[in-house]
Image (tube, rainbow, N blue to C red):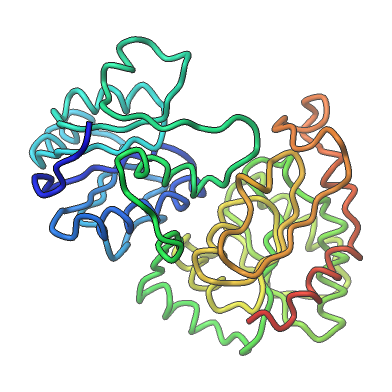
Length: 340
């Protein structure tokens, strides 16, 4: 079924996932606005992930899930959407396609989904098996299923820190050149050992680099960063837990280089155009790696990776990422020394 784009005045993009997942959906908003410049492009996300799309220049309204479900549904229905673009395969998306009364709706094709799911959508796109396609491209496949061709320059991830965040970071008095090291992830099995992070930071600072340590305020990430600080022999500026997501984006946007693991801040580096050194263990670099920025991805030679498991044997520690030596990371840093 082809779409009559002239008759589409409002589109709802639904992405229900974690921070990085939502940020990687930003190009969908941009491409839709290019294809239908007359239309309002709205998005629906979980409230905690809203900063990833807030301020997107092509977004008309950003709706969040976080309480008041009935009121949210009323608001969505009042917008009279003609098209729903589902970038998640959660049952809630099928329900929204029905309750909002859209004429067209596209979603991932899942063979294990019920007949109700299949009848809730007019278009489907396939998610390739394994770790074979970047998440940005998979998201854009939803638009390809609608007949939209996506240009190479339209696939850029957009994130707008905003004036307040930019001013806050500008007021920190940072040098013109600095490196952001973000050692943590919400999933600890993706993380490099604290002792090696500390050794890396010490080595960088002995070379004359100014290092800024970042991290989220979560107890797990804070504990890992504290282990790093305790193991360091030099002193770095520790901003872990002290920045909002928008401020973190502004910080990374000013950095000469980002060094970290598979995490939302790594994707933020891609959005801000900051070269990145990314360490990958159980997760797949093809699907989740840095996007459209100069980068070096470091992985081990373990034949079992990327497995996607929460550590070897479910033990929350992953031999693959823990085996990456500091020397390889320093070599990658050297390779990107003049990338920006």
